[in-house]
Amino acid sequence: MKLKYIPLNDRLYRYVCACRSNADDPLLEALRQETEALGDVSRMQISREQGSFMTLLVAAVGAKSAIEVGTFTGYSSICIARGLSPRGRLLCLDASAEWTAIARRYWALAGVANRIELRLGDAIPTLEKLPRPATFDFAFIDAAKEEYQDYYELILPRIRRNGLIFFDNMLWGGRLGGRRLTQGSGRAIDKLNRKLARDDRVECVLLPIADGLQLCRKL
Image (cartoon, rainbow, N blue to C red; front, side, top):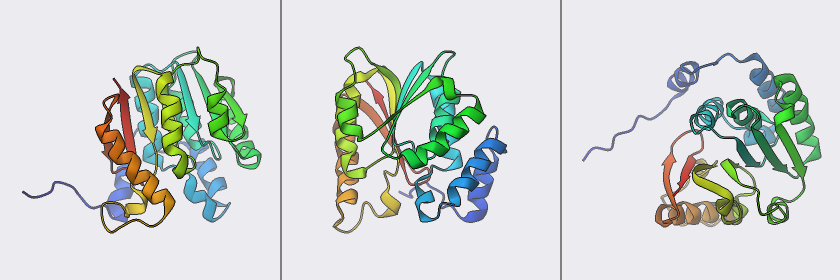
């Protein structure tokens, strides 16, 4: 049976990015340019279509509360915050005061600063210290790859039924599904992908968007 997929090239990818709502958002484009000026580290910024996809899904599930592990310069957090219902709240966890200073500035410019709380520090102890009543409708995980499974196990009990968890970089640069993996981050992502497919607590699908988005719905 012929596999059904379309390989992307630069022309087709630009077409994909152009054919989405609010494709010419000047604030997000300004943030992209400032982040790209940081050099190689800018690769941690999510893609344009990822951001649009998250805004759409956050709004579609009527999310009132969200959590993000790995904020970087704020592109994804703005996209999530824009999709939240009125008076919705987003909790952002990140270890870098330098990068999140850029995020704070753009949150204010985007008019979403009053929806976002930032907690600086290592994500795992911060998650462990969250008060028991804290629950979320949506979670986005995009931080240390070898800690993804720990984030998942700490966040899943706090996700409401039918709530969503997004993982970024789940195709690990297209290096999965082939030869034996030697790098710890690649092994961790592959292990988690396989675990999620068997986990009866969630329903999941791995989407070939950017570097791979794993989308999970809590059952």
